[in-house]
Figure (cartoon, rainbow, N blue to C red):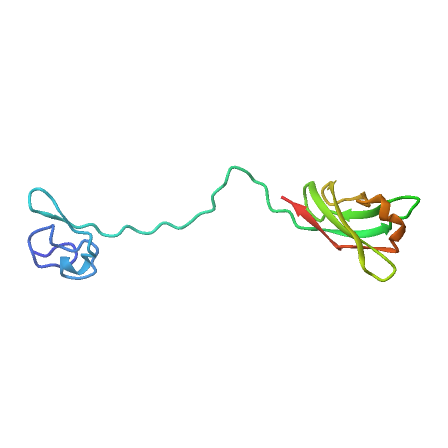
Length: 152
């Protein structure tokens, strides 16, 4: 009598139900375990599942960095640099702006940063204060990092 997989054994437990070979030992992948009756249980590896995307509790996506453009440098009359920040994202974001206040030789007098909230696909202006107002008279020009870092 022929088994499902083509084995000539009349014992249905010795047949290969998957049709891979005529020997039941051909698919014994080390998953055999002895039971208390002295019998052997062989398990065939199950079909592997396909990974799917899972949610981590939110639908928030990582924000892209924005851009920063210097509008006006600080002066003794107004010890703030004015910077325009643009948000390229489809949702509101908080962005960090970095600015270097430099002397006439191009040396950094003060490095400063500030944060600004910008609506989706919009722009906002932030006034970055000179951290040490006692050094404002040393400032000749300002340099803004053109990348406004998105704070996640």
